[in-house]
Length: 432
Image (cartoon, rainbow, N blue to C red; front, side, top):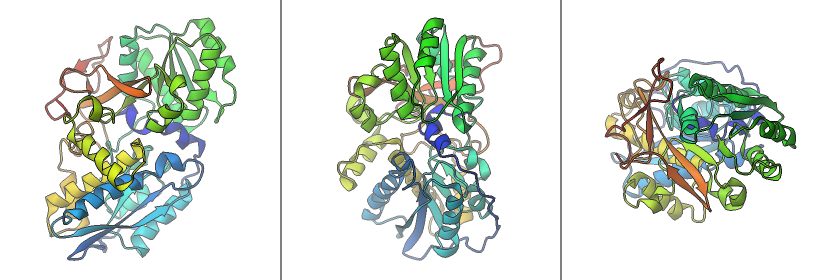
């Protein structure tokens, strides 16, 4: 996986509502190659889980899209065209409804592009890919590899079962000798648990306890915690969602494991730490973008994140920054970047081709470089992410270097390596 950061932040929410993906009929057509485009505007729409069991994880993606497009339109648009985000549709966290909604966007609403996809199961991906519709969204499932017109906000390739070396690197830095892994008993959560165990064992870090069959949502983790305590576990890796992680932390504190390090694949969230600060103290996280806190800790060093925060506050006052709205912001930036490369003679094909020529897209220094020649179907050659730790009421970046908050790894790791190979950040990495 290019970044455990990317999809695992809402991974457990995905598996809790995992509905059967629809078998949508795909119709390949170039008839709409420039639909939604006039001399003065470009019409786009999006689909997100605005209702259903997990709207808080996805609904803010539209706010990020709108904040960015409002900024662009306030400055005259792109090449004289305003961008109209006219159709924000809701799939109700339901895979079959997701397919229906993307077809509605293309066949009834006649959008040029689908911008701001935030949903646990992107069942409409194959239809959009078959019709070469430029599509941008929050990559939390493997659906995004369906075709070269689908652009995830941090790349489109995911592999839950064979992740990168990031978790093993954290274990090495913490000198962990006995790791415990917890995951839900379904879908991506279980696969991620298997992946976490795999990467630890790949680097000779003993995994002494695994429970990949936790019921979702969990109601009692006492048995798991007591067993891990008896085995001397010194690092707990959780592939559960935020509610499961909070229960885990509370149980560990109650049952004598309060000082044991925890690494959560879900929970980097400003609202979460404001609410659960005491239970999140000391927990480690991995993200694929410049932390929101960098605007305060290193003002001016990461202008892309500074701009996102300022425009989110302007257009959505009182809303805390979050990974969903940031994904929407990056999606919109990617779309506008492609428009700028194409110019006035705009078609879907030209836009897709232009974006797929980019070798180090970073959304103005927010995400680690994406090579779109590769990252629809495979990893890039280097994987860069950011470690943060919850301290007080904030997340504090860790590791990195004197130049950047990102820590970079060779991919794939050398087969002969017994410890994780870290590489210097390239000049294209934000802050480097």
